[in-house]
Length: 447
Image 1 (tube, helix red, strand yellow):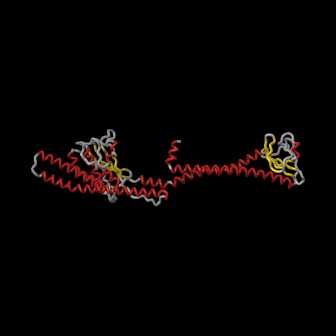
Image 2 (tube, helix red, strand yellow):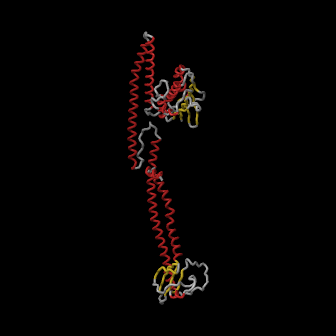
Image 3 (cartoon, one colour):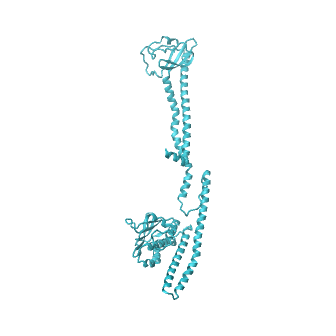
C-alpha cells in the first residue's frame, strides 16, 4: 500500500491512469446498474403484455376452458413457466394440488394486473371481464418470470462487463502513448555526454511540455557558454604561460654555459627541471583545451603500428632512464578511423603514464586486439596498479592518486578521455594482473 501511495504521489502518468480508471469504473457501475434495472423492468413488462395478449386471444377466439384431470401430464409442460387460464368464479371450488386445479383466487379481484400470494407462492395475475360478463384469470408464477427477466437483464449488462477491462487497457495504453514524448526527451538527454550541448528539437513536443524543452535548451546554451569560457580561459592562460616559460628555459641554458660553483649548478639543475615540468603542464593544458573544444573529428584512417612506432621513438629515452622494457606485442597492423594526431596524443599519454608509474627494470607493452565489431588498443604495465576507488577519478584533471611520489600534472588521462569522447570511443582501466590487482591495462575501444 505504501508503494502504491508513493507511486501515486510521484508519477503523474500513474495518477492520471488511476483517476481515469476510477472514473470509468464509476460510470460503468452506474450505467450497468441502470441498464440492468431497465432491462429487468422491460422484461417484466413484456411478460405482462404476454398475459394481456393471452386474455385478448381467449376473448377474440371465443375459447372455452376445460380443466385437466388430476395427475394428467402434458409433454413439454413446465410448472415454473406455466401460464394458467381459468374462470375467476371457479377458484372457489379449487381443491388439492394447484398444479392440476384452478388457482384459489378471491372472486372480488378487480380487473387488471396484480401480484397475489397463494400459500408460499406468488403469482402475477391478470383479471379480465369478457363481453358476455364472464371473468377470466391469466396467471403465472413470479419465480419463473423473475428468473427470465434477470437472465435477460444480465445479457444486457454483459457488454459492459466485457468492454470495461478492454477500456481500462486502452486508457492505460493511451496515457502511456501521450507521455511517450517525455520519455523520448528524457532518453535523448540521458544518452548525451558532457560535450553534446546542442539544443534539443522541441518542435515535436506537445504544447504542455514544450516550455520544458525550451527551458532545457536555455540551460544547455548557458552551460555551453560557460564551458566555452572555461576552455578559452585555459587555452589563453596556457598560451600566455608558454612564452615566459620558454624565456626562462633559454635564460637557464645561457646561465648553465657560464662558470658556476657546484652548489649553484645543482640549484640551476633543479630550476631547469622545474621549468621543464612547467612547460610540460602548459603543453598538456593546451592539448586538453583542444580536445575539449568539441570540434568535429576529421574523417581519416590511421595505421596503428605507425602511431606505435612514433610513440616509441618519442618515449624510448624516458623508458631507458628507468631501464624499462618498452615494446609492441607482435601482430597484424590495423587501420582505424581516427586522425593520426588524436591517436598519437592518446597513446603517447597512456604510455607516458605507464612509464612514469612503472618501477625501475619494469615492463610496458603496447598491442591491439581485433574484436567483433571493432578494434581494442591497449597499453599494459607491471606497476603498482590503481586502487578501485581511483579508477574513475584519475580521469579528472589534476587528480593524482594518494601515495604516489611520481612527478606529474594529472592531465594525461583527462586528455585521453576528452579525445576518446570526442571520437565516440571508450577508455577503460583495469588491473593487468587480476589475481594480485597489480599493473594497469589501459584500453581504447574503436569501431
